[in-house]
Image (cartoon, rainbow over all chains, first blue to last red; front, side, top):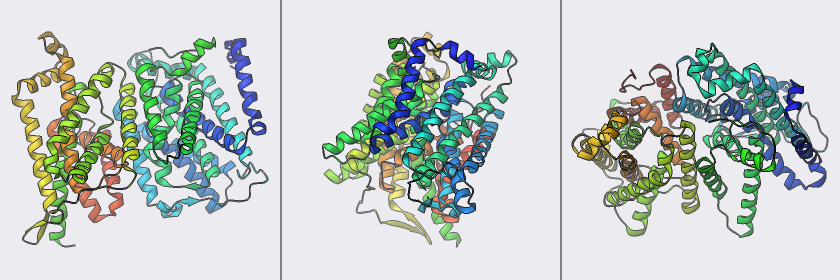
Length: 336
Length: 290
């Protein structure tokens, strides 16, 4: 499998990928704190975008409630840490399990009862919103007044407890984002990956060929949910505070899907490219408006909306396939 | 808790539900005919509400007088949106339509945030606190006016689809697209008109809702979800279903506010949505697809 991955890459791809990885690994030594925090958030969106991409881009199931899995992961690990002193290195697995279970419930209800397309998307939103309101009344984790993790002075790094400097968090999310990219790429090359794409392109045809559509769609949701939950754990321990509206809100779910759509649905590098594009643009815009002395909330989101609209109107396949072709990288495109 | 209180709340819920119904009717018409899911529906509703608030604040225009203006404005907006943006998407994959309108919604919400700020804005008419007393039951005057106006608008819409030539032509497109093309209907124009009629509905409903509740930019996405809950509960694409769903949700929200915690009222709606999606995806009044 690993060899497959290597042989598919041209020298040009390999050189570019290595350069990018080296640049990102070296970043903490070169850039300042502010820029590092920007790249860190970009990598976070690349990571959760990749998890969403697995479900939508490869398996073709449109979820608009991925904030649910982020939130469940975040709250599970944080609650275990605060209430029972369970370190996130272990809490992580509980977080993944809880999110996977939630994904399994949603997937079961949807696929068992034939809910698809728009109805499926609405079902995912309904679950996320339901949970948001539930957590707003869940006093054990602070309800609307928020849930806080103890902030310690961040001089040493403790990976087990996920307490440490921002550089540590940077490397954690870099590893996660790179790992997710490789993981999704490898998974897509397996039999399972081909089943997913068959279901995405034509579910009835896939079923006629004897693919157990229900089982593989369930797997897509469960894997994607568990991956997304890891992002939630990271978020909880990086920010040290959780608010239901902030974590489960529908705007969070939308944020997750922007990067992979802009980069290119179903491409492996698309979520990364998309995350960097909107990350840089959003940050640049914030700085520009601040420098101009305009304090307007919403301008960043407005521009996201405009970009999303232009992309889906003009290049629904996303930007990465275009860029890749221009630069001569090999790319497996999503047909359609 | 006396029966009078329950009755008062119940009637309030029904009246608000009428306005919800009109909003959902717009969504249902757009989906029923064009088969495009308008995910910016609530955001358009918020735009209409802001328009009503602005007209009241700037010119002292009573919402009922502003009604035709806002409706016309939203009609034009919907017409342009369908012509310029949505039309080419009618035959594109579902998720692309979804994302397109999601983007429109994000733009509208944040446009409102930039223009009006995050504060809640409302309309304070001089009859805002008036009410009718029927026995011990108190009925809010503003809500009554809004509900009556919504019912008139809904009746007008239903009449348009039943009796007007254009309305019949639009229904023909919804029933059998190929048949409509064969007999020479200008489907593109009719689609544009339908979208515009749907958004005009929102214009009316938004103006009326602005009389009842205050508007914030965040209300847009909430109303979108609410509209979807209503049309799915009633049956996506079914006009009687949208009306029934609107009143049902209005009542259930009002009762949830009374019996449980007010902040948990939409949880009930989402739970209802999940149950309906699973058990009866065609909605309570929708036709089971054959």
